[in-house]
Image 1 (tube, one colour):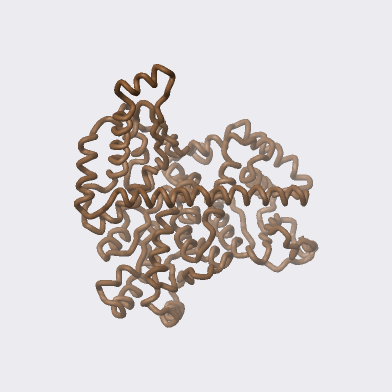
Image 2 (image 1 turned 135 degrees about the horizontal axis):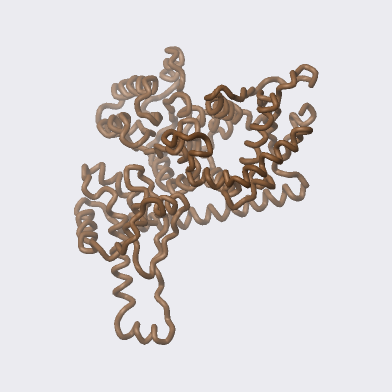
Length: 495
């Protein structure tokens, strides 16, 4: 687990004020391991084995996506190229390497410096052995959890097949032909492949804004790799006796945590996570009166790092907590979620926040639900993130270019084609109907659709939680989308 070594060690280096070794120990550890590998598989004894057909046991570099956006996105590929190695490169990292990687023999260079860096690490009181042992333990547990998720998904699919129900269907009447034609055109033009290649021409001629906003395509995979670090923070906060968490954020930074809180609730033994996204003094005062500040951790979430409302919330609760717990401990009550280089990152570093989660800057706020914006708050309330992210990755795979959009295999493309064609035909009011346990999801979809369309005079109006009426009460401008949980028939008859 290459990059996870840096993820585990960098925070310890920052606490000790050492910046020289940041982002270097993971590569150093791998280079030393490769040097040991070369020393093992050489000499007369090995030559006899090789002559008899024996092969080396190749070092395998896993977890080679870059977790820290401040580092090169090809760091753990560029630095580990050598003979007889295997690199399990994630798709996003592979594409980045194809675009701007450095294909050169690098693994054998700088071995002495690597050993020196590890020695310096030890002198700082940080044990690389302890870190790697924990990573191994966590990694095995994560693989076991992933296997459980896989088996659970198979079981769900089995039940679905036994019930003879499709995961998604559409009753489009006379518009079915137009949707089918659109899906065929999307397939013929390789639209999905272009999107995965970050081709801005799918939308418009200007590359800047769009090309820098597609990081969400691969974020579920990135967050799976980040789970050990997130869970470590959650475990530490729980062990320190914290009972509540208050997320301070606005708009896209607060909506996903709100929906997750409403949908999943709080698991026993975890933190009661609330969200403050209103500048109404009464709402702020209500949270202040409700919370025991000595048992509360504040999650300050703003991607830009400069949202005035969020920073105002932070300043207020920081000063209130400072007065109660003192300067020495106040930083342990705060966690920051922001983009690299933001004003909040600087503030959080200066005030010694417990943790700073740096998000991918190539993700817009309303597309950030499965990034650090949504996942750490969910972890604090005990959401099963292995299952959640596992299902997200299943959806990701379903919508990759290897599926056939022309046949409707890609569920996301299929839904997009329906929304687009029905809107063109005048059905531009998308009415969301959801089973009661997941009604909160409509709030997030509502913002996603409302803010993502209408930029050029063509938009879709989402309608959420509207009481259902008889057909004669609606104009001919609706498209109903029904999100139904298995075994829930609350709205079956009305829909």
